[in-house]
Length: 165
Image (cartoon, rainbow, N blue to C red; front, side, top):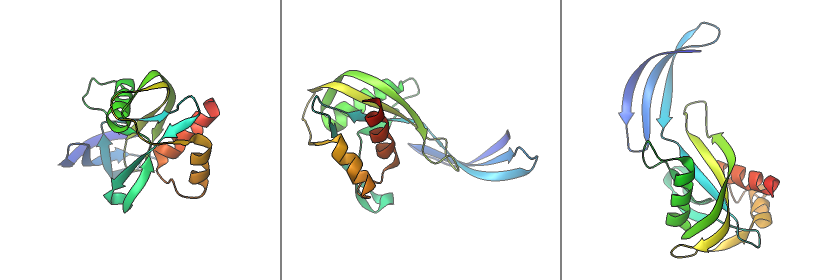
């Protein structure tokens, strides 16, 4: 696949939307609506009892509140995914981790965006500011199966962390 010209439609704080002229593997040229994203990190923060931290976030696009892992966008072009994960864990959950282990990365919706979320599991947790509520990983995976947790990065992170345990 060959990339050609890009016509910028919108450049925002988190995403850039553009129309990209692309030659597909079969030789056909098409215009695709593509959202370019800075990248992000998400953290499965596990305490010694195997409990995980989830944040209840209001997400307008999702229609209200949903449960998510602590996560956020890379702050600046030089910020590493690991530094972003540590920052978000501190800012959103009030915790710091003795170790942050990479679980891999996911492409959220590759049909129209290059958004890549780096997933980490955090161990040896200690309060950084204000500690939040925890629930058990097993219970959280059960909540995924019941449809109570629908956020893709959270579902992937919980399953990958459970496999790594």
